[in-house]
Length: 370
Image (cartoon, rainbow, N blue to C red; front, side, top):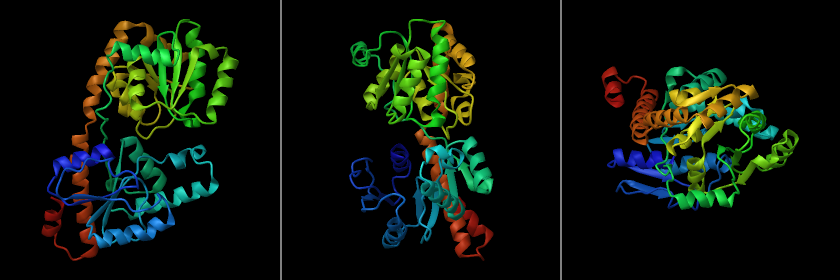
């Protein structure tokens, strides 16, 4: 959201903006326009208090339109509203929300937000289809706006930094990398099974699993032991952005076996760092990766291992994937996302105006939407 806000402020610097940020995030977004201000009320996301205090803030500041960057909208709003619903993972994968109460609350709030918002923004055509199917929303109410990728993701070419990252995590061989938190849909176990098959062909390789895995790390370590590949699998835990860029850049292949993604940022991050991508053919991933990835069924370890081996050992194939990755990234630009988002704001304002003034003439409505 930080990159989107900064792009909007750049494109429309003369607008009046109120950025409602969580405490401690005052410096998160660079506000260089005269008409933009930030406030940091003591509100917790998804809290009952937010339902009462946020509308008051909107009234006090005479806000014309609220953009909620996640699926949480105040049920009573004094202005037009746009909500971003990135996906409906909480409905499709109950394992993501362990608490039964949390699942009920999620379903209720996301359904209310989809119903009450004047317009909905989502990240992919796949997510739009899921929102229509799961929440019964009119497709015309939803606008797909592809996000961009942070400009921080660039290839790391410093040999010393690349060697240091290898040394820190004791990476002995050329390696395949996967970055994800631990969730069943992230499908780490299938990647371990595919990597076992991969090692039967290519002995000298490592698999580097990046990210905080919490309780899942113990389970994955046990599986690696059972598969006889424990010495070749490296768990880094949480890494900062600088280390992440280096780990992407030094890898021969980025492998993504995920079963459900509303968008799939890590695939684009890897491409931005000049890494060949092998990924699942599930959900939004083919839409996001386009022609720049080698696809394989993560439910078939032999098939996924074959795809990883091809990208890992075939220099011509790997170079072609990297080049296609650079081209694919051109579809995802924050400037374009800002332009399309501003257009959605105008649509939402027009919808809201027609709701409050049912007799509004067609000419006036067209002027509002322009």
